[in-house]
Length: 416
Image (cartoon, rainbow, N blue to C red; front, side):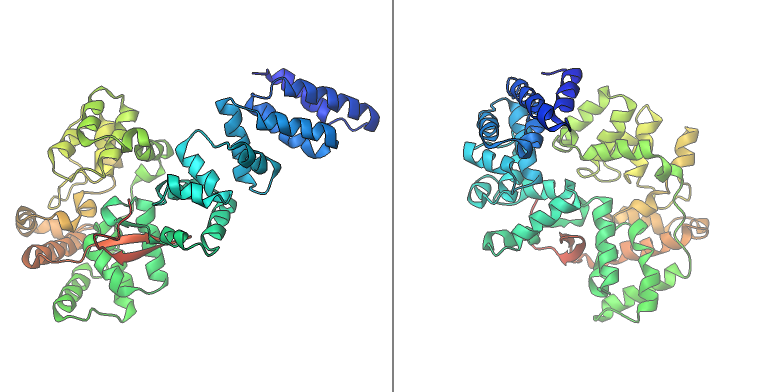
């Protein structure tokens, strides 16, 4: 590897503005770079200087780049190809059969460079490409979508990505809600309302009230009118300071990283025993997609020795306190100050058991006043309907290019 001082010196020679001296200086710099062509930074410099070289020197550099074999050097060449599929770097990669060492980046490279036959051998269900698409900037997303719309029928399945609501993160759910509101998709919005926690669903009731829409069946009309009456004009309680903690949110977001997300529930719980508090927050977030409120695993988070982990449990909705009126029953000051709201806002109606309905019906009258009183009334109505009817259509989020759409779930329509 070249030192930064060596690289800076060679860059200065490559950028020389005096024509005659610059030509000789640049040739000498290129020769020195060729001796270190396996260095990924050198690969970048050689690609940068290529347009300034004469034919003989340019061919020499291109031959050298095709021969790069180090992992980092090949990755650097492939990344240049991904950024510009029409570049010399892309042509050299294809001629030499080079691919990024990372599987997902390799799939992205094959796709954007138009090597679709090779791509579909590696990623026929778009799993890797979708992950890369989610991480890409707008320019790269546009390039991916241009290929998807190019007419190859194999690409149409990209639009069929669906995830059950329980598998979606907060951003995906809120994006789908915004899209459905924009398109006034009241039927699917109401189905989603009946399934989602009320931190998402309660604010929708204001939009329903002013929409003039109502469900088609008498049973759903009765439920619809009741939840509107329960809600009244009460606003959702304002979020507390947790949302202002960028560091805490970053720890939670790390729960989506494969190092945690790919572990089983038991492995995560075992890892939690030895984790420091920030990592414990990430582990709690990773557990959120695998466990339910009130489960033994959820309780192990809520009774963790460190308050940060318990706070993460509240943030992930592990508390099953649907009847109480206190945001948190914790001895730690910061948990009580920062927890967003009680379990009533995070409870998934589909998880309801007869005992939950009984707890709501037997809750003291003061539980149905104040900021969360109306929310708790709505939850009591939803849980009661679920327990007595037992039939609800499950919803999914179908991802589009720039927004999500709600769709009904069928067993063959979910692509994980």
